[in-house]
Image 1 (cartoon, rainbow, N blue to C red):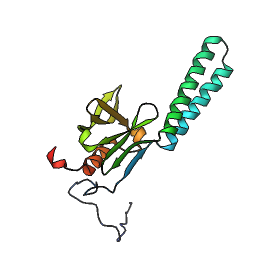
Image 2 (cartoon, rainbow, N blue to C red):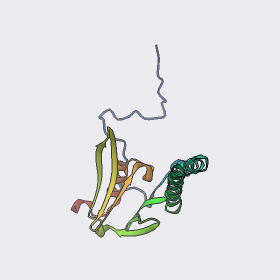
Image 3 (spheres, helix red, strand yellow):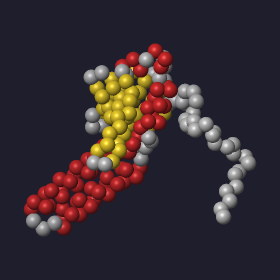
Image 4 (cartoon, rainbow, N blue to C red):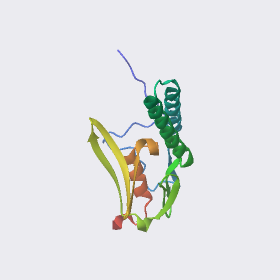
Length: 165
């Protein structure tokens, strides 16, 4: 028989099934960044491909492994240069734009924030979509280091005049 003892200093969880999301606007600014382990993994993969290029016999495998190594290194470098993917501030969002650029979007420029959820090859994927008219940014869990639904909720909570949308 297993007995679980509750800490008397910690209140019981709500029994009504309500979520634990905080009530009220979040404390700004909020920053969403690529986690360190993702950056390290990309550079490690680049190293593995580079080693494969050195050890490969034949021109084609060497070239393919070299291209893969360079691609992964560039992909990892992008994460180093633009580690912060999304920043929520009182006057809008700062987002990654292009390879290593940033764009500032005022709240009036943002038409919609939504989470695009799809089933691909048996795996459920979620992307946070920031729609600013002619520009649409999409951010996954491993770019934000957070659940896209939680980030969308935080953005909507920070957004002024939400009741008018």
